[in-house]
Length: 284
Image (cartoon, rainbow, N blue to C red):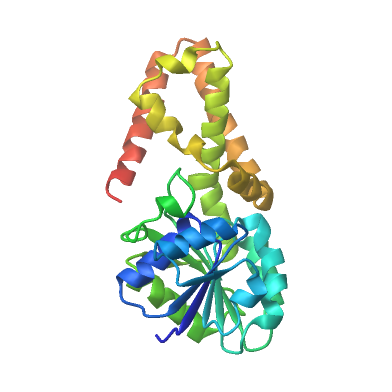
């Protein structure tokens, strides 16, 4: 794969980690960072995360062989609209967004002739945002979901797939809608529940969280995630997240009924079923 210039739009945790990972594996492309904050971009360049920067996305993609959209998902369609006329023929555009579905199809439709879009979602991150938290090994051993459609160029798909593998990710292919159905349950639901759980506990008394221990911290760690990002994800995948929330609500209702009936044996069976299912994550 020969990429002479790679442009990253959104020099936050994922975009910056992508840049550092490229450098780590020896991909000698010029890396252009695009963002809204000139001061932060200059600092990222000073730290060697990116090689050059601009606050104008259309300028940043000129001459780029690969463009990574690493901004919040709520901004991606507008960004694609802004850059479409400045993408060179043969360029590949991909992303790291947590929502696919309609968003993939919308961005795909905006690509000019000769430019390919390949949807992507690395399952990696931290609760800390920004380039300061970036690491070159963030994607090493992580899953990365690639979401081709019938319109996806096969050569572009292969190049994006191989690039993520080169960065150490375990790549899986699935449709955009299959992605959103799965991740509404295994990612989006837990984040929404974590936010709700913290609010529920915090509402009981003013100082109650001061008494929480490691278990509570582990369970609610993802409630530290950037709220703007998760607001966008929820709005973009609302139907599937709502279904997951309703399924979760039904499960909670079942547990409440066991408490009301003092069905402690049944409650233990629920706990055991969950414990056995949870073991699968330990082998990941």
